[in-house]
Length: 430
Image (tube, rainbow, N blue to C red; front, side, top):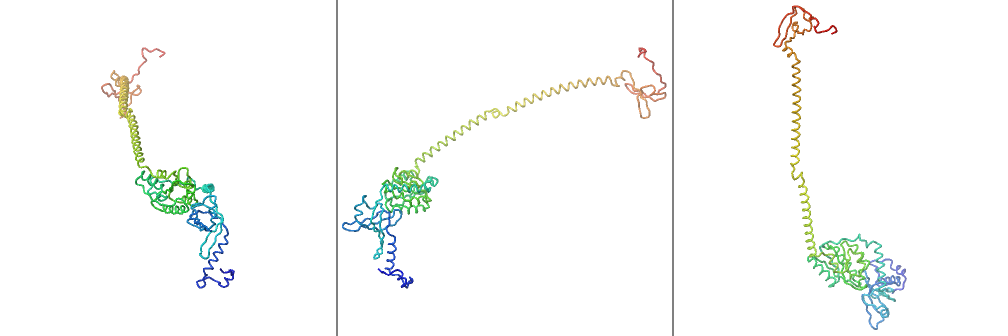
């Protein structure tokens, strides 16, 4: 390893290029110096490999991230593992304290730890509770975000362990209820450090599948540590971000991982999930038959009610005998016509009698009747004019006269005029 300061190396090698490349040792030294500046750190992960050989002074571990497919080599004193209060094994979740070291000879990085703390059940539950409160505060549990589950999915995406009881239960129950159901199955790890990355990949693949209408996360029961992947924050956010409805069927009824809260539907068990997303063909057929019977009964009842109402309407006089009112009006009109005719005849008879009486009176008082009794009408003739003689002064001697009697007229001439004296029966006072 070179002991020269960085400034001296820059003075000798002012630039890095294809003609002046860095040697491997320089890069290794720089990486080692940079990693040394990080200092000691606390790291959380899950033990996936443990190599503890008797008689050796160093134990080798592989610490994997719980939410991503990343791992880190760890070395420690074997006594840290042997003297741990909680027995450590592959799959245990731990928090370690150590310092990163870069081995320039092999070009590898290892974390040399001096303290290992197992993550207990209480601490895991506390972390899950804090994450639950955080997701709830962000609104990821809001019922308005829940997507509806289709009544009859075209294809069901199933994420579960390979050859697991959960897969058997979901497929068996679903095909029993609806034989035509189809599945798109993705077998992944359902516990351990590789579970979350594999489940995330499966969700992404099924969410992008054009025929998958619903996705089921299915796993049998287990301990809190076994169900930890389904309370992972990254997995919860992926469930919320998916466009396809997701059903969480993790564990048994008492188990409540965080995936139950963010999923669109929570099923108590994998069997319950199959029952809730796939309709029962026999039950649906029975329901259809019942609905048809109810519809027929309702239709018959409606027809009966309408028939009775129509019969009631038809039984009304105006519809049962529509000409009755016309006949009644016809009879009434005939009565009025007869009454009017009698009234007119009576009126005409009365008027005819009155007219006859007037005619008789006029005949009695008229000139013709007077002439018939022996009277005559004397008229003075002057050319074409004729004037009735009313006094002797109107007809002086020699005047041409026309005397009309009952049966004709006589032409004469006035010879003399003689006034009449008073009547014998008159008195001096008359």
